[in-house]
Image (cartoon, rainbow, N blue to C red; front, side, top):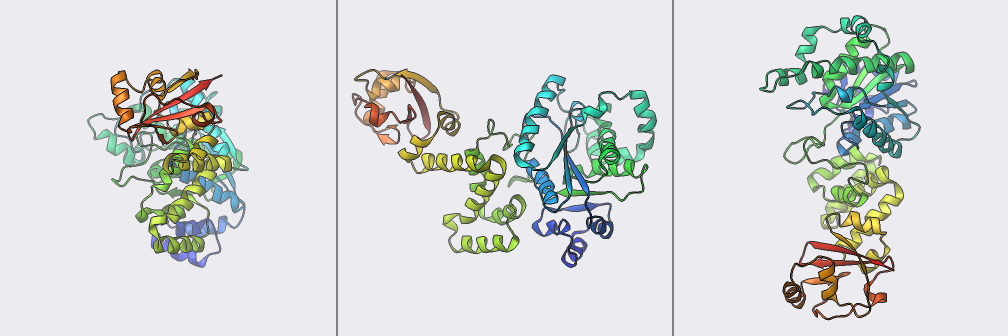
Length: 435
């Protein structure tokens, strides 16, 4: 549906879900011309769903907008379902891909389903999470093709952008990938039959799969059904943000810590921050306008970015995650000993993810030179002595320039039994003191 038409209807309609267009979260409605009917349907409780294929062991920021759209729906009184594609992940969605995915084992997919379920549980309330393997596991392939496959027309299937871009490429397209749209289409039919699901939400690159589902479901019911798409998040170079592109920011704290997530949004550019506040937070638009006014008056304070980072970190990791992210930020950027002292060992390791960790006993009279050598900071003692004397070594942010300086437990070993060594500007080492 053309966006100007959508804007006119949203501004004159009390329908709050359609007003998500004003935030930039609702990019298109399918089928074209269906907004008046969708508006009528949304005046009562509807059930909507979004699917997530477990091709990794975590969702990423690129998936977050679809979850946020489901939350908006929940807050407006509608029912939300998250479907994890335990079956379809074994097939592989060709949308947006230049080559076929590497095959995944059933065990790998099963593990990913468990991890992604945890991602969703942390973000959604009053949700339903389903695994489409549950309704495909007992399916007979002959029966499936005869009852479902016969409703798909080859011309329509071949016309999908995801298919055209691949069959005309040197790599071509496998029959397995070609059938993906049949299975995703059947997901919607199954959800309509079992949960009266009439709305599918997906990224803008999923319009072909949404269309396939719409065409199948409408062959079995006269109920009005609709597809809603959310925008794709791209980098400044225009690349889709996701795991395939190698630039994923994960929702699982084990893969992307709350500190790293917080910093990702702190570093959003001034050109993008207002759009991101509208997309990734639930702040009212007038409040976002007020935040932007304050930000533009003093952009160096990064007021808008801090608000954005706080809101997203709480959404994904909760209040405790935000607290940890802010303590890590103070420890890293403000070089605060108090902040380092407040960190748990796991938080410290996440903050300095690339830092080697060494467990040592603090012997009486141990010098900074001895600690650096035992922690593996230097290969040769002569190099260690030279760099320490030049002021290139810091212990818990304190510069020590005497190789024979003796460490004192109450001062140089923090209350969490950790010492942080920095050599030069970027090389960190973590010492865990054994008692």
